[in-house]
Image (cartoon, rainbow, N blue to C red; front, side, top):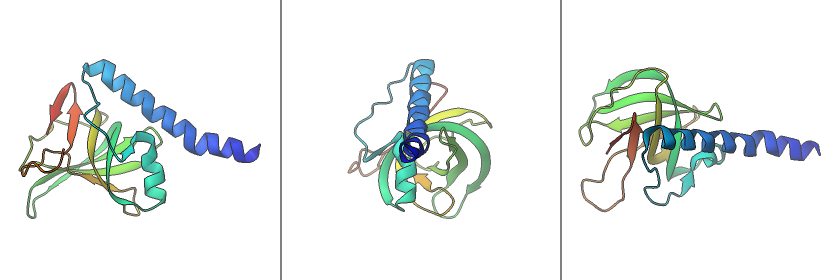
Length: 149
């Protein structure tokens, strides 16, 4: 019974919270988040982090907890920390040479699709934009009903 409770608390509950956030964001913005299939969806980010996977497409929703300085080395990237419903945090690195900058503030809710790369701090999500070469489906970020690609 203790193992079942552990599984429920550590796997199922965070997944339900993230799914609830996605539904809330969907009905708040009127935007359809089903942009295609992903290798990893929402609540499975925690499992991807634990397994130290990299290069997988994820779709997540969460709250912006911190705005960071832009990364201006090479392609310019807008950076911020996103907290998921499971309390896991991700660094989001959004290429602003290929997509518009988001008008973000702390505590804003966003949903996004991008490529997850593992690190010991929770991971980084990048490729939150279209693929200029047209080979990949690419990613996106939805903020206040607007999709940025």
